[in-house]
Structure formats: structure tokens, C-alpha cells
Length: 438
Image (tube, rainbow, N blue to C red; front, side, top):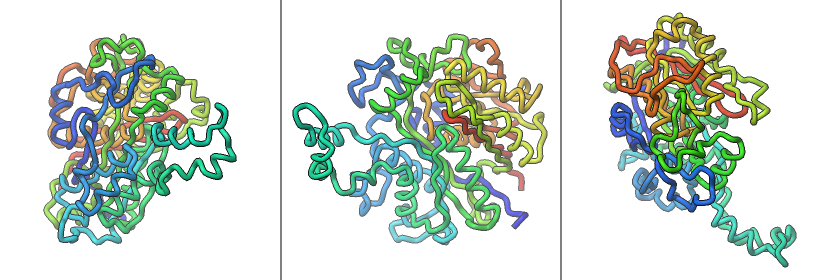
């Protein structure tokens, strides 16, 4: 199995910049600003009232007709993953039980795996609140009353909407994936970590195709509250939402919450060639790290990103100066941006100045568990096309935040790209892509 190679043959992106790889890519190349005032719920009393939200979105358009009733028991995170999966399989022209009405599949079900990153799924407050209200006596929550009758006001399948592994669960059911399945919940690093693990599944012969990536929506009252309590949000951008999120910029004042995610199709090279698949890029390196200091969630950390990048380069058997593009994470939280640049410089040395760099957060907001695979999709498209999107809202680098970023699209010979991300809690991951060469 040592000679097995892993390539990307399909991209599924769902975020405010676009639903589908092509709309997303065009928005990125144009430097489109996709953050606006939140209207999914009443955010008027929150210090930050803006976000990268998905408008008029439902997974019903991305599932077989006989599965549409199940959308009722999907939290928004699950719906995003299900939509991204459908888009990815169709982009790869890979027929599965979910995309082919005849139920036929281009891959043996037992050889089709699934690795999806997820976050903390917030329960619907209206739904939960109404049930909790039935267990209130004289203005106080009565635990006995809740146990005896209150929770009976929730649908029996209520919990199945909010378990993180349900993203993978629905995707595997819809598409008939019977191979290895896993869920990783490591915040923003989840996308890179799932892709790295999925690649290993294929390399060791446990699967021929794996759908992998991540999805999350923190664009809800609890998500907004938690990020505000962590002091990470741009509270001064409510009057000009489109330009509020400014990664690596001298005027960066915090991040904004976006919702979305991406799933990509990883495929063993010979399997892909046998069916004439288009190939975006080859996945040649993966690295992960963890910084124990991340347990202090109020102190910025990038989860040992420098070590993750160093490992990924070593796995790819290349030196830092072989990297032509860095797809950075860029949360726009000033302290995190500074630490991230330090990590890139520690891992790559002078090569960090040479390689072109970009970050997507200014356009979409922070996508959390959905970020990594969207960043990977951007990297794959850049490697395939030789185009590098601008870093939206970047005009002047903050002190100690100097990467080779630009405010306009660029072109270049991109043979290797690296993408890395980190999450609150101290985890990080990095993936190296290479232009496919037969």
C-alpha cells in the first residue's frame, strides 16, 4: 500500500460567499465582502450584531426526496454538512446512493469512508425554552417536574439534532457509505485534522474514497454570547459590517461569526484515474499538534501551529522554500493573528516572506469547525488554477503580522500550497497540497 496516492476530486462549499465551489471561488477572486447584519434571530441586544450568515438555506434541496422528512431532525450544522456532501459528490461526478436515483454507486460502499469535523451544536432555544417553561413553578425551575413531565414536551428524537456525530451519520446514511466513519471536534482545526486522518485511511488501504471536512454554525444566541464572553468579537463594526473583519490588518478589532463549512472528496489516485475523474490537487502532507496551554481559553494560543506545519512539510518531504502559497487562518483577533504569523515564521523561516499568502475570514467571518475544509478547498482551487484570491479587508499589515498578503487577486506558478488552522483549546492542524503530476 506504500505507493498509494491521495487526490482531491470533489469540492463542496457552503458559506455566505457561495453555495458550491464555483460561486464560492468567484466570490473569493472578486474579494467580495459577505458579512452583514444578523437577521436569523434578534441580535439587537448583543454587542456584535453582524455575521456571515447563509440566507434562504435549507438542506431539503440537497437530499433525496425520500429523505426530506429527516431534515426536521437536523440542526443547522447538520444541514450544512449534508448540503456540502451532496455538492462534493456531484462536483466529483461520483455517483452514490444519494446522488443516483437508481441507487447505484461508483464506489463500493464498504470502501467509502466519512470523516467530518463538528463543533458544539447549540440546541434550538425556542424549542428547548418552551419545554423548560413547562417545568417552572412559582418562577423557579423544578428539576422533579422536568424529569416527570417537562422533558416529555420535547420530541423523542430531539437529542439526535444536537449530537456532533450526526453530521457524519446523516451523510453516511444518505450516500450509503459503509467504510470507516469518524467525527473530530477540535474547533477550527477540525477540518485539517479530518482531512489528515482521511488521507491516512486511504494510504493504509482502509478505503478508496473518503468524504471529509467540517461544518458548523455558531450564528445563534448562545454562540454569539460565548464568543463575546471570550472577548473575540468585533463589537465596533456594527455600522459597517462588510469591512468589520480584518485579518492581519493594522485595524483588526476582532472576528465575526460566520456559518458554513466544506467537504471534499479524497480519492485513491488509481481509483480516480480509472473513472476519469478530474483532479484538483494531490494531498501530500499532514501534521497536527496540541498546546496544553490552550486549556486557558481566555489566553490566546495557536495550538502549536508551527509544529503542525513542520510535521506537514516533513510528511510531504519538502523544504519550506518549496511552498508557493500559504492559506492562513487569520481570525482577525489581533493577538491570535500575531501568534499565527510567528508560528508560520518559526516553521518556514525566510520562506514565509517568499510564498504568497491569503486568508478568507475577512469575506466570510470565522467558520470555526467549518473553516479548515473551506480553506483547503480554496488552496486546491488555487493550485489547480494558479490564481490566489485577495485577503478581504486587508490594507496594511499589523505590527508583527507580516505575511505576503495582498488586497487584490494574483496569479502565479503554484506547485505546493499549505493550509493551517488552530482552535480554542490548543489544537492545530496543517495540510500540504501539491499540483497533480501524473
